[in-house]
Amino acid sequence: MVDDSRAIRPSFGGPMRRSLLCAVFALSILFVPQLRADGVDLFTYQVGNTSIQWQLDASPIPSWFSPGYAFSIYNVPYTLNGVADTGSVIFLDFTTHNGGVTIVSDTTHHEVLEAYFAMLYSGSENAPTFLLGTFNLSDAFNQNPTGGWSAATLSITAVPEPSSLLFLGTGLAGLAGAIRRKVRQ
Image (tube, rainbow, N blue to C red; front, top):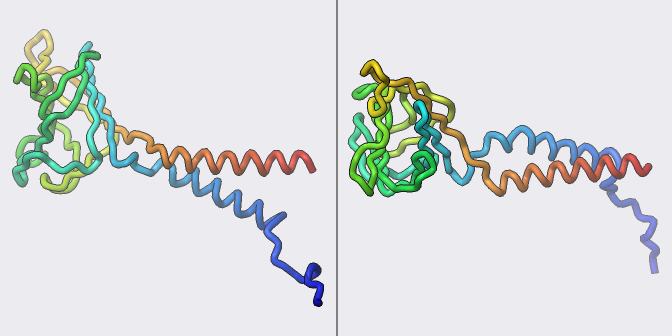
């Protein structure tokens, strides 16, 4: 019998292990903030004391659309100052309507939001993708005391995806393990 216990085997320890852990950690830091959460975006609209929040897919399939004009998504759950309702959310094209968004309540069939002058999506009306950021809008529904349109803001942010948080946690755990091992030596 041949004793192969002394055979040369590739080692996965020392500098190679540290390099791999550092690479995994660096990748998790670089790519996790850019991942879109299962394609879900959070919309937060603020005008005066009025706050409206809703969530939509980052690249939704419109319930209705008109090329170069607008698209709509029906039955969207939203909260208006903490009170839950559902409604139709209509996004307007910038070239024909100066951009904007409107929400019509399914309960009252009245507009609860009507704001203009910001393009909120890219792509066509039949395949839109929402832009992330904070947008300044002019609110036509909540007029200011002088009868003009009120200044409003709409923030669109990506909702963190559980798998990307798991990826970040794995990278941090690997780094903690490497540091712990280094301290013991």
